[in-house]
Length: 213
Image (cartoon, rainbow, N blue to C red; front, side):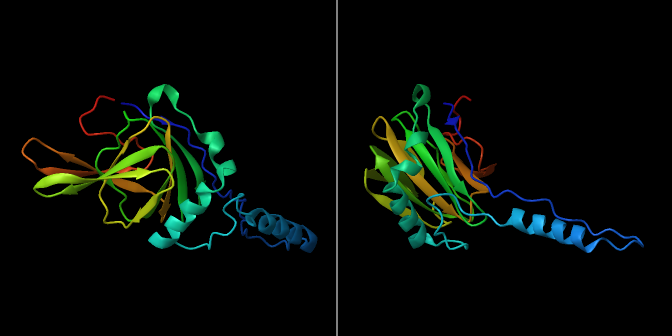
């Protein structure tokens, strides 16, 4: 199963930093002030609409859940990114800075992330259309299954391992992570029940281990 990605991260741009150069000639003060003014102005950036009130620091689980719940009430920020290309799981980056990133995910019942964790990041999920199912592994028993329907949300810490699948056609969810996702742990369980973890980049497609690419 392949996933379709529509990654549109909102990243802070960086201005050119001035260089300190040696030499005997003293720079013209007007030219120096103009260079400094250009450098400073290029570093001062406003947050995109909908994310102006982020505190500029890492968010805890409670704050992440509050964030996805607030974004759910502002469909003008994410509705245009909803898509279901050929039934594949589709995702779009709504925001990313040094403290938090936010994603929109679109699901069908054929979509399955496989078992994974989020490395050092905490996270939160809000379902804004349809329903998804969260599975949590249990040693010696069947996974704990929770169906999360439209209007419901949940949060988790870095120690959380789960697997998400679509329940209804055209399901949509908003996910937020802090610190921003960098790596994820992908888990596989062989026929003898042995579990192994593989580190993957956050941009890689999660799929159940063993599935064809």
